[in-house]
Image: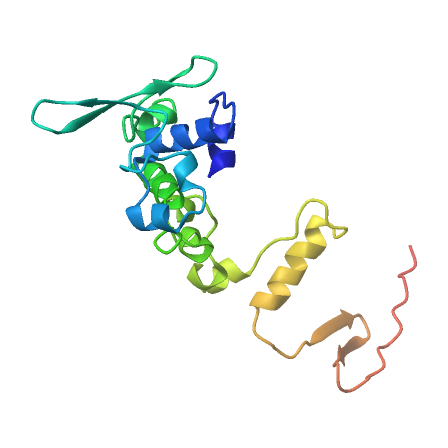
Length: 199
């Protein structure tokens, strides 16, 4: 998650600033995760407010959080004040936004797993169909070799015709002035010699 924030064009200065950028986008982490964290007190006050924010208590007792600044004066908004669409510079692809949102879930127990990510609509829209989803028709299973193949186009076509054609007995007949003879693949019949006519 930190690396995503660092690669999104945000200039980060230290781990506190990283966490501020993440909270600005994702809101406050769940209380259960804060309680389990050994270093939570470095970033969150005992009242549960992020240390980078400025708090203001109203007369009715409620507290308002205002964004703060990094050590170098970069403004950081209060938790949840920035949307993913803004962080991604105006991206309006709902599938992609959902994909990123589910990847950046605070809680590892509810965060999208790699196998779930591979089945997400955003990735499936871009990945080629698995072999089981492709058409099983004979036309789709016969493919011509690529141009880099050593076969010539004519031999490739002949091979396809042989695959597609049903198995039949081959029989050829050669005829000349003396008569005819038949060549059969099983019976090795000798053919009569054919002489060139005298001109």
